Image (cartoon, rainbow over all chains, first blue to last red; front, side, top):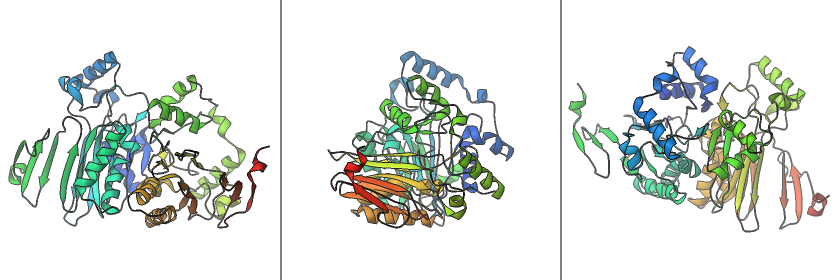
Amino acid sequence: MDGATRRAGALCGTRRLRHPVSAARRLLEEGRVLALAAGVEDRLGAAGEERMDPAWFITAERAAQLETARAAGRTLLDHAGEAARAAGDDAGTVGAVARDAAGALAAATSTGGMTNKPAGRVGDSPVIGAGTWADSRSVAVSATGVGEAFLRTAFAHEVDARVRLAGQSLAEAVSAALEQVRGVGGEGGCVALDAAGAVLAFNSQGMYRAWVDPAAGRWGLAIFGETELEGGPMSELVA
Amino acid sequence: MDGATRRAGALCGTRRLRHPVSAARRLLEEGRVLALAAGVEDRLGAAGEERMDPAWFITAERAAQLETARAAGRTLLDHAGEAARAAGDDAGTVGAVARDAAGALAAATSTGGMTNKPAGRVGDSPVIGAGTWADSRSVAVSATGVGEAFLRTAFAHEVDARVRLAGQSLAEAVSAALEQVRGVGGEGGCVALDAAGAVLAFNSQGMYRAWVDPAAGRWGLAIFGETELEGGPMSELVA
């Protein structure tokens, strides 16, 4: 979602697009907000989006996680709990928020969804207002977690509304919106950004996250509750 | 969406389910918020939802509208404009909001979508927070119109947020949220309800609407800007 124009693009049910965010951006530029991938993958492919055989996306680690989840009869958060972590399940949803030099905000989210999810399930990631939101007047948000809870609380737009309509700080808004998620039995978190700086909050056990702050001239990364596990000057990022 | 529990269910891309709202309610009860119909129609059918051949849904009027839209190379709102009305296109999206005796609010929306829409397009109707929202603490909303604009403004949840977080009246909130829709080039409207009573607002040319008000003991209906085109005592509704 482009917060400057509030244009948005999203896909659900992708099976072959190698770069879903790039494909979503193409839909944004076409004026399409949300599309079933089955209806647009061929057209987007013909327009230049790279397509792969569905088998290309299968990794041994993910296949093993799926078998574990099936054997347990459970649906697992891609980054939740000891079982998932023991299975090496630590590279699921990818979320990004950004602010350009002019102050425009943007957000993007890409995910494979929960492991062993029911056929046809759509989570919050492609739903503008639930898993993803950007409005340069307020905030950019990309969420991850139990999608049903983020959908039922319109999480990303709830953060926006609390900043824009209720005058809350971004930290207050994210905390209150995550409280709503907990209230309907969910867990997860988000990366969020406003004009004043970045906030990240989560209520799952951990979340792999990294950031670049040009104003401070630094990058950083963290996993659990720590503020920074590793970090350094931005010059290290320019190989 | 059930505003008492904030549980929700929705489907996109249905081709065979005769009663999509009933099917969506079944998903709500299963804890699924949003699903691709292609992945669940068979299962829902086996669970008792009536399925029809896709051809059953085709009517001569709708087929003619589609041909008209294709010939003009346009995508049409199902209830917008002279062209659509001349073609008899006046029975599109169906939205409902309700409040029970205990004050619980609920909302539901069903639509065939815009005429001559691109393959794979999903509008706002099945998106909780965009076309449909219910929270017994604030409002129930069901919207209709140019779905892209309602998605880009998280319309139904925007109404909720304005009532719940900004202390606006339902009428103020609906008006302000429709202003956001206009701001991104959209038109449409909604039916909305709070604990104090119903408000309907629209910015398309007209909207067929009807209501039952047990407190007042009356039913009514209207199409354009009038407050009531026809109406009468509720006893007339009990055949």
